[in-house]
Length: 464
Image 1 (cartoon, rainbow, N blue to C red):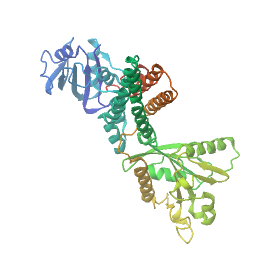
Image 2: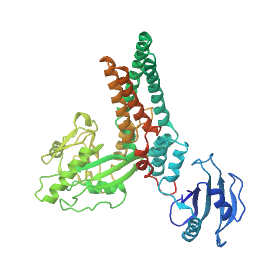
Image 3: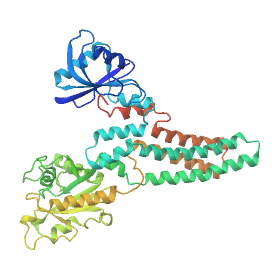
Image 4: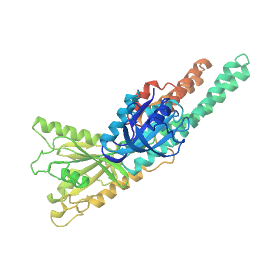
């Protein structure tokens, strides 16, 4: 079936791109262009007419892209029409009138995958590229779409195939004991080397996944220390209600932020205290849960309340969070799964003398109201992101699906080695290697992909 879709953003624009793919693409373009098919891959001006009524639809630039040397690998055409809503609707209605079908989300890319134009990791990289909001996300997605992850995974697969070849050779020459045993043993160092590579990939701190989703930052503290004010100041808009009544914030309020190319997701939370209201108690519970799940916790205190007393409550140790992974506020212990914590001292513009310094040199001193110190806080977050997630030469794992399949491959290889040590029959050992091969094959789509295709391609917008 030949499909079509608006491939540019919906709404009024100077130019809109309508994409067509399938066996009827040539005939469709020929009829739209009143019998004047453009030369392949040459942008040409044409007056588009309805193939049935011959009513003029628009004046446009058109491209004829015969397969397989194009995105989907099958015949394609692209129409660059004027971007008014009525023009786009008229052209797309004409395509429907002659029997073309509106594409489903991700269907163009799925056809490209089906025709061998890209693998699953490259398709996922394209989806991430479409959805990238920051420079770091763009670079990571572009590397994946360009085949960086595929190359890494294929290297693992080749190593595994080598080990499998040794095992299969031992089965083929089972009547020759010396040959069979020698070939079987040759698979062991290959499997051990591959396990080491897989474990190294898994021990990356989830940096690729975190950058793809955004670095989670939870702002926690007692009521009225200025958490909502800080969220608004960093976001540059009134995202959270600010009022001097304790308990104003009840739910977790989330804002996405781009700091020097790094994606951050800031979460304002309810003030932590001994609450009596069930609603406020739920807010405190959600605040503690947000802190536990966060990659970074901003433990916020009110600098206008004095020095030693508030500092003791925060138990702050500066940026070296690993040495002090928890914060105690109003009887509650605030923990973070990552253990990374910054002490943020707010309201220094109204702090009593002596000025900032009462909470230690590692604290970040700010005034969410005046903007004092906000650049220093942003710089601290960017420095943390660069040091934590900017390292690593190898392409990072960007999705849980990848991590899951790599873990399955590692487990199957471990079972293979355990079987070898236990004197397991070669036939059973070979089955463990096949399980590992299946897992690695599902990474790029070389094996058993039907169960993951819908999930992957459903992330795309219509027309891509």
